Length: 188
Image (cartoon, rainbow, N blue to C red; front, side, top):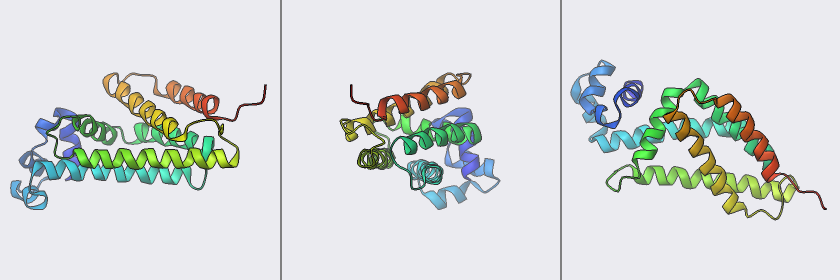
């Protein structure tokens, strides 16, 4: 069912991803999806949470026990890997994320929860890097975490709107910027 929903989201957006259409695309009866999820809002929330779980697993695997610049570098690599290996899932996840700005989006709290967890993890990596000396101690870790997350979200948004964006080049540039911005500064 998830793959059917992803296909419908990517092909026709949220409006096309009806419970009946997902059931039909997946080869099930129309009522099975309704029985499992109840409402379209619950289905969309479940889909978002499934995509986020995949993203978190990718990031955790990539980062491991690293922190600071090295952890952020690994997050950038995981992002590029997700775009390259699962572009439809990434498109569907961000379609739902951006649709959550609608005050009527019932899955809005799911997206907010995911954003909070993402920011918390990035802040933790930055603070651990500061303690270890791999991140400039003068950086406001909370503010820097918000900036890093916003940069990643913005990059994904640009890729969604412009699929031919040179993602590999932007990936390489972002990695270089992470080192330049977050790395320790030498005394002058």
